[in-house]
Image (tube, rainbow, N blue to C red; front, side, top):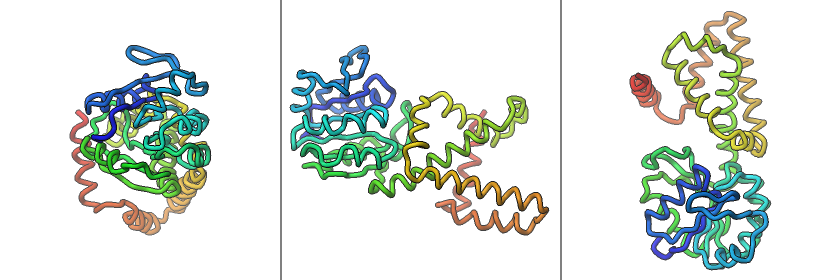
Length: 281
């Protein structure tokens, strides 16, 4: 991103915002971190009520990142976009695109790029993936993609609707599976210290140690989340009926049919699972 020198990160006191702020600083950007309550090296700013000083900073910025809760991004994106230069780029980190796309509309003339890091703060970027959805092409769209690729990320280009459909499966449905598991088991079940049991409890702990509003928005804001949850429920119901009927052949058929949903060769994924289990100790 050689042509981009001035960057503002809203939500810089949060894990994701701090991650982007540090990356941009390391890449030589002149950065400004902003958050509602401020912090060390971070200015206190109410994104919902921009003052004149921040509006001037926005006008001079080349890159602005909204690393804030989805509801705040939707509420403020239009006003931020209108304050920015037409040559600049506004980037949001929303986990669900449909409400944000509607909220930002055609506000301003800056480039609009929506991203979704498919990993959490504190994890290495190398080998992880990030979704990029271009809502309005910026002057140099390859700059953002190139910067992220050079940082070791795999780029997944998706339009907003396809993003939300896949997110409903990979996030809303998956989180529902994990939370359904941990909500229905007992603490004593951890005594059965099998690798799958430990991994499921680890996944649950990762969610439960995060911020509830993030996971709530994934479920409540994604227009395809309800459909994904109902598919999960129907699948569990069908599985239960097969087991209650004692139908071993139908059980085997269900497993055989599920192999086509893996998205990668079964032996490769199975081998990776063995490595994960082997690393638990």
